[in-house]
Image (cartoon, rainbow over all chains, first blue to last red; front, side):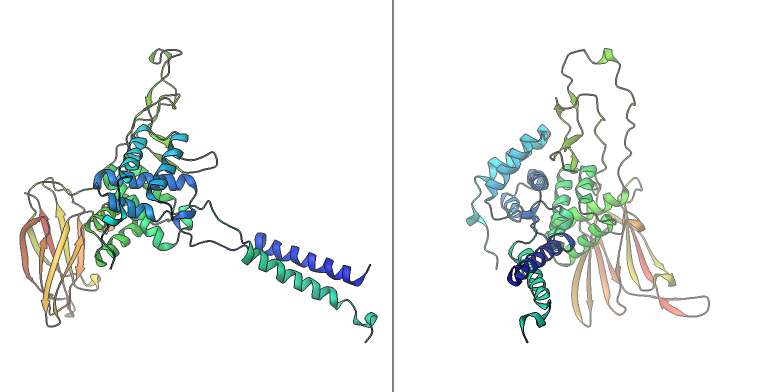
Length: 118
Length: 297
């Protein structure tokens, strides 16, 4: 076998060993994740918590800020996705009512209402 | 040196080069992506926000099992203590009172533990109780939130009729909502100098009881002081140290400073609290603590 071919095979074996080590033996560990990476059911429960708190606090701005940590999507989209998940997965009617109330109210929320953060 | 004398080192070079390329690809170019993470993996500040939100939802619903189920996702074996510490930190950082209060009351409720769960009947109800071939509408206390692979299942906030539950299920869990007893302002019932060398440092200890003599958590205590180094004010809540009693709170006294204590709910302030000395049997002197007992008439 030609030397250059053996050299290429050695490189390929090395790449395979490196990927095995990087992906399987010692993959990049995500221990400090952000809420936008949460699984869909946890995100939906997060939105449900916001809806439960909103029911008592009646503070749309505070609810929007809480939803904001779930990612870059608009709060309306975040709630809409959660409601869709809740409908698909059989949440209790009481929970659905809370989430749908939040979904309706959040549409009228305007970021410009919020006081600028110093 | 001719080609044959160079030996197999080129193979090792290729292997090392390959490993380096493989690691660059696996760690930098295409690292493992965690897109379906769980709350346990959140960064610590997001975990704190998560706990605060659980507390806010708990304040709204009073559903302790649901709050516990949510906090369980953080895999914290001492979650009650963690929530209590967060409540104290929130208070010290001047976070909104609603957040501090919610965290404090949740910590107290977690310290108390869940209310007793009624025993489920082992056998289904007799056939006569459920008409045959009629959809059964029963209250459900479980709302499965997740997909088939999920482990998250949280009790519903308010039990509601559902057709998804084929058999009679448990009745709604009674939950205790820890909150100050509404009623008359607290009145100072007793003020005692406690001489206990085991306390280690002088304290103002507060205990709050309702008219029935039950300890009351979540009572906001305001302490103002005036000393050579200036004046100040601190606020704290009863119940944040549930191991010492649900109506208990304390603050460390600095000798030489005069304190005035009052409860946020009203009532007469207690002025001129200063660290006082005690004497042990052996003649050693140490600082005592003030125990103030408040009760609703």
